[in-house]
Image (cartoon, rainbow, N blue to C red; front, side, top):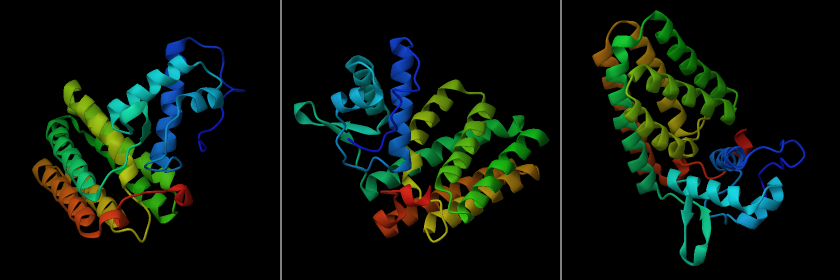
Amino acid sequence: MTGAGDVRDTAPDVPGTSRKTEVVNRVREEILSGRLRPGEPIRDAALAGQFGVSITPVREAVTQLIGEGLVTSLPNKRRQVTVLTPAAAAQLMDTLGVLLAAALRRAAPRCGPAECERLAVSAAELKRAGSARDGAAARQAVRAFIDQLMRLSGNLELAALIDTTAVRSYRLIDLTPGSGLWAIWTDGLNEVTTTLTGGRPVAATARLERMFTEVVDEIATHGKRSIVLDMTSND
């Protein structure tokens, strides 16, 4: 398997749990960035050799990624990067929208000027990164926005559900000009933060819900053109 960075020369000799976490993070990022494409086989032995670790932390890491929905287990002990159909992608984004709207309702009472400003900074960074065709920075801006909402919600169980769903969602969105989803996300998140800062939490939540309705409609209408299959050209 190709694509994942070789960490043999830089990784210290750390316990198995830390090595597992390192492998999880490296493979997850390769999948989210599109460098590991949907349907590409995941081979434990190849990963172990590439990362300079034993087979055990690799197997544990792949098991975790299966739980996150980024890797699919197949018959005969085969695994591959998960392939999402447009219908499955639309359902995933719809679920993320429901969860984030619930988080925003709970976060609004805790969102003072400083918190609203941080959300606004993330929304503005998304627009800047997209304009610069910087896919990695755009994804990071969305992650930052979602992470802030999770913290502000004050609900750890809700935050855990959002985190699991969000990780699977990041690779679905082409956040660069020319994609239908870029304008939906940039306009939506910037309007959400402006409305929230203006002291209108109900309207802000309604705008967030409408944004996800538009995202789902875009995916349903244009199918795979709205889904990132290989974002390496945008990073």
